[in-house]
Image (cartoon, rainbow over all chains, first blue to last red; front, top):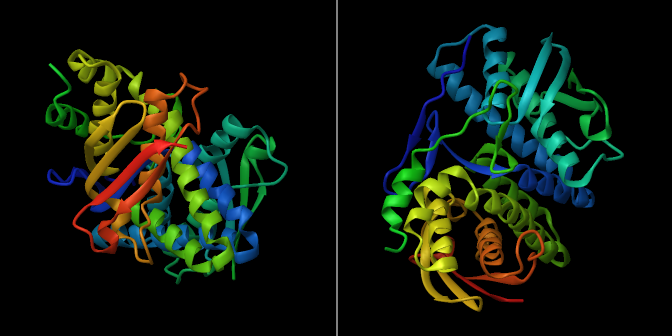
Length: 171
Length: 193
């Protein structure tokens, strides 16, 4: 399967759309600082808010794509998420697993590599964004509601590991 | 000739970005991402809703700061990029003022906001008006175009503060009108800190 990318522009407002969804460009500075803000607000649930928002938003986009394209197999549905991740410029991942959970290896990472470019290595994993994204991928692949999967980042490029690794468990 | 905004907007709006074979978008001396507007707005809404009264200002400053640093570093990459060089620089006859006009044309073309300069006192004050910006879609209380404020501040720093990267935090931007609170347009005022 290869994700179809349909870019459109509203000639009146100049807003940009990808597969019918409004999108906008920012840089690793933005995502790194948003992540740091969420972490700094841990006492009010900032990290979980970021994960949840990513999962809910991406799930809606993946659902829209799989429905419009009639994709029913878990592999095809999983690939929609994996390929969107790369199309959005977020990096490159390898996904393995089943309905009960699995593992995701992050080979390249916008956020981790950007974090290191901006601040250098960190002492703990920081990729909340990708945790939410992976939860959405598994949920759409196996047709589960949002918040069905718990994703834990166990190795992290931002901490100096060669790859990121995420463990996915059905909640 | 000065910068012809419509020409620049049309030329730059044709650019689309997507991840390369590594799933990355290295452009303008940064790593670019392309994210759903709904995700960014929803994060702002939820984090502000979760913040107690004594933390709201810190959250708002954090949201502005994220856009500011993004705008400062990426903005420098944009105004020194090949495409800016090809499309905008041939029209520049009024120095910094035209660079700033070109930057706002890019601002519009790349979908951050349909916005332009309505008042400019060089190196002192700038008023920006926006007829459309994605943060106006968000739900919440008060004016909340934090991304827009950060980018305006960054562009003015890049244009009139000390040369990159030494000019950070010279100017500040306040929002004075907002579509999200019922005004017909958004208005933003940049002045020295």
